[in-house]
Length: 534
Image 1 (cartoon, one colour):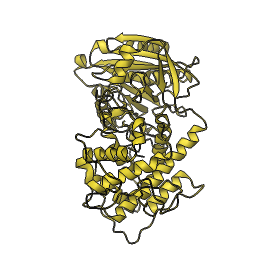
Image 2: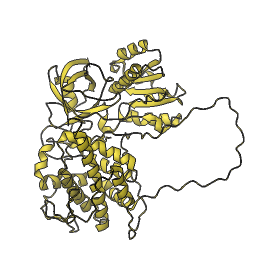
Image 3: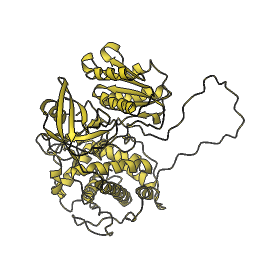
Image 4: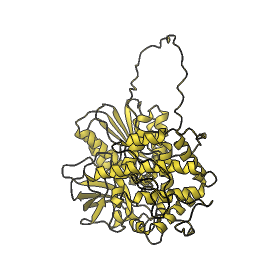
């Protein structure tokens, strides 16, 4: 649990590089503005309360952690219990003596639809919140049918919205309390983590300013979906699998939980009490167990990372390169997904990039990379990488994939290097031999930025069901989503968006305005995963 763009995201760095990651200087997942006071082993919160040391799941209650503190009483998840049942148990546990406060409003970051991306505190995901995919519904209208008077029926009031569980109320109340001082909370969290557990510091890059917001985003994601077992479990399982490449082990989770609760109790001291601490312990314990179980299962079937050799490097523009690599062993993925990537020049700094093609028979993988100002990884890939260089790849992730069980058309919006996964989706449809209509709107600021237009036009010539429409902002005087309004109707289409977060947000709003239901709008965009970022 605690991208984008993933935190509980143990050692992770997977968001868009804004020029602050890498380089020299200290700091942990989030670099403090100023050095917080060095905590001693017995230092508690500001009101004198000692920090709770979370025990690993399965350890008997009362066992003391590294700091010598006794963990609050908690029930370990039952052996053989499903992960969804574990989270449901936390959400539904009755607490008759608890006074349930009204749920506070807060701005939360949604996890990506399906298992993604994010990393806890990273990749959330980043991560431009992703649209959740619900069950497919039929939206086919019946033109020509006349309106008929509705039969008289008994009108029933709508069912009341599900009431938040007591733990969810307390978790969300905490997040609302610390929302305005998130930078202090995260700075203190990392100070505690690296002072109490210095052995974990080497798992992180030297400077990680880009991760300052990730802990808060991940916490908000978990707080928002704490009562939505299906969504939260998928989200956490993906985080657990993704953390393997950072060297995260089960024994690291109690240390993170101890310091997380220590930081929250310090900065939410006005409302913090034993009941709230117990809610966090229960929630964190269950969440960490889901992640640990997912990582253990993934370890049986896939490596933690893949080595990949650069076999070609095509500089399309002064700041955009098409990089093709050959993994050292088979790398399974789906068109429309993305992966995290680490270069030899910036160890332990990972960035997300989408696959620019459907799976190929030769096993090669291609990425479109735009060098951004002060972007450590993107500049290395564009300006330093050459054939023969070896990079590392994390596991594939993302759910912006084609549903081949339907014949719905595809409406694709790709901005800048966001055209990469759109191209992969087109190839995927072609390889399945389908004749469903695919409409691609390829957006760029200038003609010069349409670096892959020739490839897309060649695909259009080969496939009569494909239409490609370049949209240049300076010529159209309209943003890409606004141009889409002029075409259509789109009620028989599934929508796919990839590009800068601003385009994703305005695109989703536009598509909803023109009648496309949310469950048919797909993207894996979070600020951390933006193609325009690093």
